[in-house]
Amino acid sequence: MKILHIIPSLGVGGTEKMLFELCRGLDSSRFSQSVISLKTGGVTADNLMKENIQVTSLNSPDSFWAGVLNSPRLWLELRRIIREVSPDIVHTWLTRANVIGRLAAAGLGRQVISSLRVIEKEKIYHLLVEKLTHRLCDRVTVNCSLLKDFAVGRIGIPESKVEVIFNGVVPIAPLAMSESGAEKSPLVIGAMGRLHKQKGFDILIKAAPKIFSRASAAKILIAGEGPEKKRLQSLIQSMKLNSVELVGLEKSSSFMPKLDIFVLSSRWEGMPNVVMEAMSQGVPVAAASTGGVTDLIEDGQEGLLFSPENSQALADAVVRLMQAPALRQQLSIEAGKKIRKKFSLETMLETYSKLYEHIG
Image (cartoon, rainbow, N blue to C red; front, side, top):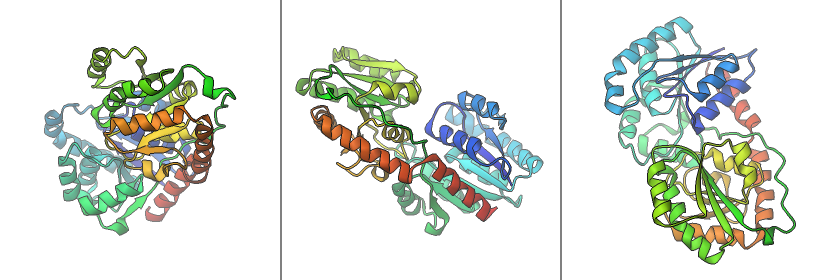
């Protein structure tokens, strides 16, 4: 069976990572896969090619209006590629690729799967174009329960057409916890993601004085790059927070072992891979109760939840974890169990395989 994936870009990101794991992990004797990036290549494109996955970049501009003006060319290119590749299924990822991919595949006799990955609260025009074109696809996958509600209630996609497929990670042995965890100094609090308004790193930074005033033996590390970097750095400097540091890009496999607590401060989310990775590596989590976080964590069971955009609630959750080593350990144990039971990479791959075979 031939699968042609279409995605806006192949740089660093949660959707890109899940697409890579899907292409790498599916049985190559059953599925032949290729990927089209509407924009240029990137780290994920390089990684896909190392796995012998064919990647085509259409070099569409990054800026919004230039991208809109480039849409007719993309449509023609995609129709040509779909005819040449002759896939059984065209799988589109994220709104820009969903829309142009659906239009390009229309009338060519291909099954179309589209994937929504985030409960969008910033680009409202995404909802409009999804509403106008979702009838051109056969199935819509989402990565969390709240996103299914959003797709049905806000976009108007029939519930029978929407399937929840959770992101997956490889469960690994949890990090060993020091017996003297209560006295460790300083405790390291970490956050990770694209430095963008969505991720709410400014909320974490504003919570830092509240955290340090109640538990001074701590430092905060924020890993990632993005458009908010200069603003966040200025905020740290203006607040004179010597114990808060932007550490740039890091792999989760090297970043998580440095941490005693992981924080997700996002304003909105889909299914946050970084929380899954922290849980799978035994790092206790305090997270904003948004998007797929509520599928991953029951408050007080696998982690602590707090209200989005509430720096005081964030600080309270972090301080509670800092002051209770036994709680951190218990949450980590339960989080690992949840990941192995419901959010493993193996489960994700098996679910996508069944979907492809069912509609292909």
